[in-house]
Amino acid sequence: MDARTWFLLVMLLWILFDAGQSAEWEDIQYDPSHPGKCTINPGVVLNPGVSIKDPTHECRKILCGLNGRVVYHSCGVSILPPPCRYGGYINPDLPYPDCCSKALLCN
Image (cartoon, rainbow, N blue to C red):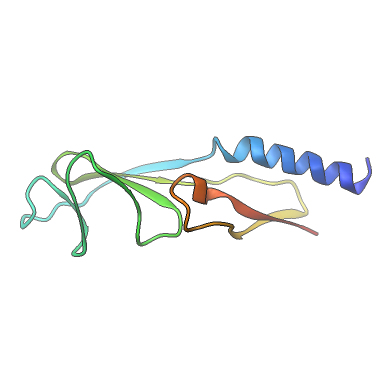
């Protein structure tokens, strides 16, 4: 297999797997001065049901639940075959999950 065919195959696999790779975790972000809301930090207080792109991260979504329960959605992790690796986010200003695309670096 020549280098161009191999590179196209890696790119195709990357595109197919990249869209489905995400990570999710929960936290409690409750502040008694904002009852029932999610207090991410003093400048980010969300009502239940509100979802925003996390202003403290390049590409992550925050979903506010009841009583400060927060669900974070990140781009997740995927593994590339050597010698390829991911670089930085290509368009971190796009909304989540469109901001998840990363540069593909292959030696």
